[in-house]
Length: 124
Image (cartoon, rainbow, N blue to C red; front, side, top):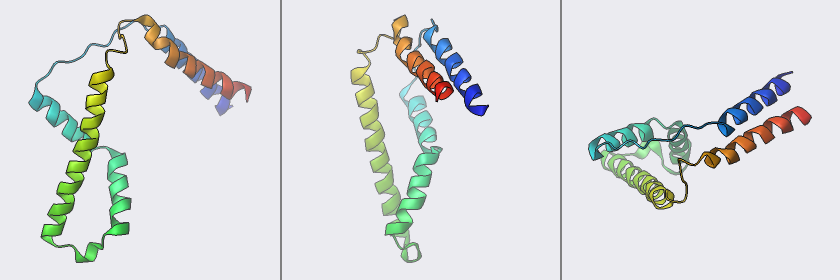
């Protein structure tokens, strides 16, 4: 029963996405506001938190950490995260011209994927 309800819900969501006519408006806020927003989103990202909570203790003896080693680890993690997220940002800026956000056919592919997934759940 849950599978059928889930499949019907996915079909409904796909239909709503397929027929969505709204356009995405890009917000032009300041550098400081963007930095603070990105910083808070990064700090609250549970995937990153869980990754570092499970990854670091496997390679670092937590009992032997000194203040300088903790500062070094924090700076290293911050630099790695910044480089990864900046790379994502630069790639997104470069490819934004590929997608015409005002084009209604932009929603057809994700809508079709949702409808297909819902149909697959119902038929399976």
